Each structure stands twice: as structure tokens, then as C-alpha cells.
Image (cartoon, rainbow, N blue to C red; front, side):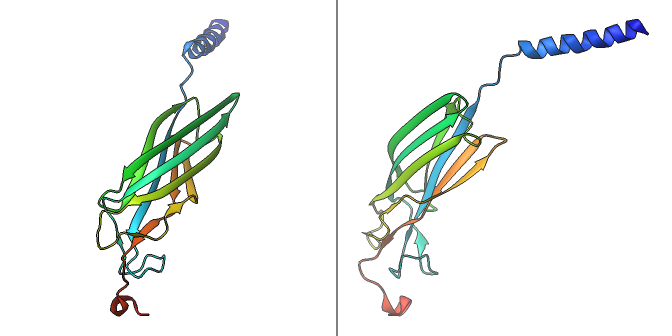
Length: 166
């Protein structure tokens, strides 16, 4: 009986030593900032049934992230231009931010997206030119943070009264 207890305690001790020998897991965050651009056919700053997403529009993104996690304080700032895809969406993916658990850390973020130019001659007058309002989605398990900015829009130079009314 004593040999069985000794074996059991030894097994527990060896297991605890082997887990202590493993290197600590490296914390790495994945951050995505995204938004959409659409053509506001009726020039009323809302997405109507006549509006459509605008592919090929150029958007400037200026962002700053400040994160506090345990004893770490990090700051990331960037300015980039992005072109919308065929669904009118632009995005920037920051694949790995070492040492920050973005889904758990206190992150103070500020991002601004600004319209640069439209790919459409029929819809090229800026409506909502810039956006700073965002919705943050955080997934703790995968350490993913997604920041979605409010929509930006272009308008046609003339509104079609027959399509949109007065």
C-alpha cells in the first residue's frame, strides 16, 4: 500500500516538474480594422434600396492602439490607404501583436477612416467623408479583436427625383 502511495505522489511530482519545464505560451493578438463604402443614390446619408456597395474606392485609415496588460504598456500607430473590394469593404489586418491579449487587455483605440476618391464617375461626391465611431468585437479564446467603423459614402452629383422622390 505504501509503495502505491509513493508511486502516486512521485507521479504527481514528476508531472508538475514537466509542466514547469515547458516554456510559457507566447501571447499573440490578431487585430482587424474594417468598414464599408457605399453609393448613396438618394443623397440622404442612409443605405436605401437604391444604394449599392462601392468597389474600388480608396480609403485612408489612421489608427492608434494603446494597450495595458499586466506590467506591459504598448502603443501601435499606423496610417495606411486601402481600396474597397467588390463588396465595398476595406480592411486592415494586423496579424500579430506580441505580448498583448487584446481580448482581455485594456485597449484604448482610436481609428479614423477618410474617403480619398471614388472609382465611379457616376457616384463621386463625398457624403460621409470620415468616420471615427467604431464597434469592437473581442473573442477571448482566439485572442481576436475586430474594430468595425461606421459606413462612408459617396453620392452622385445629381439626385434622380424619379427614383428617390423630392
